[in-house]
Amino acid sequence: MAKNEERYLLQAFEFEGVLRAYLYRYTRDNSEVEELLQETYARLLSAGCRDEPEVRSVRAFALAIARNAAFDWLRRQDLVPIEVIADRETLDVVDESEPIDEIVSGHRELARLVSEVQDLPEGCRQVFTLRKVYGYSQKEIASRLQIPENQVEQHLTRAATRCSQALFRQASPAQRSGFFGHRQPRTRIHAEGS
Amino acid sequence: MQRAREIGSRATAWLIRLEREATPELWEELQQWLDSQPRHRAEFIRQRTAWNRCDKLKMLRPDDGRIDADLLSGIELVPPRDIRSMESEYAPGAWGTGATAAAGNQGRFSRATGLSRRVWLAAAAVAGLAVLAVWYLASQRGWQTYVTAIGGEQHIALRDGSTVELNTNSAIRVRMSTGQRDIVLVYGEALFHVMHDAKRPFLVTASGTLVQAVGTAFSVRIRDNDRVEVLVTDGRVAFGTPRPDATDEPVLSATAHAVSKGQDAALSHGSMSLTDLSPQEMARRLAWTGGKLSFQGATLSEAVAEFNRYNVRHLSIADPSILQMSIGITPFNSTDLDSFLGALEQFHIIALRSGDGREVRLLADPKTRAGAPRAPSIAQGPSTLE
Image (cartoon, rainbow over all chains, first blue to last red):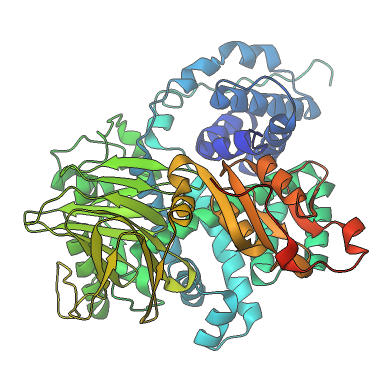
């Protein structure tokens, strides 16, 4: 059976919070985390397209890719912490995180989504509710709420961004403790003479 | 380098734009954007995955068919620590979202049992919305929920000895009480093998429709537009709408129809249709229980829609002239794209894949199209069904 080329990427979304926290250790800068996360995802996607032996632990693999992306970034910053940091990272530790019951995490995800939607402005929330709870098309929503279709589209675009944050941004508690519970201070050494 | 946030906004804008209308021109433009940077494509997949996952909010849809755009603002989340004190008999932890994660809970839940008893939604203070919240609380008590992802399938053994096969992208809720066995098909499709128990009717509610059985086997599927289909493979069931005066436990109204073995009943906006199916057709319709798909006399657009149910990677038909073409395909693995495309080649339908093969569009083969247009009825499957 043909492999789904998106498979590594799709799995990585489930521990995006871990990847974010991991990247933050190197960058100490949230907007750089965003950049490096996207870069990590792009590399995971192309890894899924290559004809190579199947990766056994996607989590360890994704973290290694994130680390490489972070090192590339650090090089561009003229910093040379590579050996220092590399020695301290034991990627295997992360992979021991407990498997979370699928249904539990499903419920938690639903809860996060609902609370995210509640924070949306009223119009946006209503449009989103009609689309995702009741399954109306954008056209139907426009005529039901008597607003232009363009506005429906704008509301949904906004809501979609928020939902991806709600779903993927944070790591689950089990993933957080253990690995990030004892955060080490980051070692950052400037290159001599740079 | 383009900033991540901007790529994110563009990806969502694309996603929603295409949901509104997908013209070949827009599609072409999207491909160019996706191909221009690997990050574009990765982010698009990320946003698409999240957006599709939002469909699970359908679970919160009230069973009574009421439409309320403010539904979600009427539901309030109980803070995780409150749940823990309320339901301390359950394993601690795992409820914390970001804020309470620091508590260091490592607790692990046992399998689904009792989970839905966790009343994690509490009544909204707003008067008009309290009704909904009460409905939700009441409906959550004693219920267990089972969900499958796209391409997934789950075998569920119920306490009474009945079994459920849950098809791709489906959700059910189950409640076993002494008087009856209640199942709600929230979305998707499920096949039930009901253990005989005359004292406890087995009731399946699906999008405003009710199916009642005593000991039999049948499948229920919710299609788009709230059309509900029931396929009886053994025994007979009663099929109709629930009585409006029934409160907590659904009761079948007097106008229910009987559906017998080998029949397919569909209820859509109050009108019911009944069809006798041949054993072959019946087997074909239930091929999903073995992870297979097959088509006989389906139109291409039906076949593609069916295939897409099982696959994260969606196919699209880029050529309107082949939408209604009739096709027949012998059973193949429902997540096997290459088998499906290979079978379509027999109908002179070719697949255009983007450079990396992740997007697939179907077209009539230009070589055959140059000649006289083929009548759809000429198209034949590679072989007939067994």
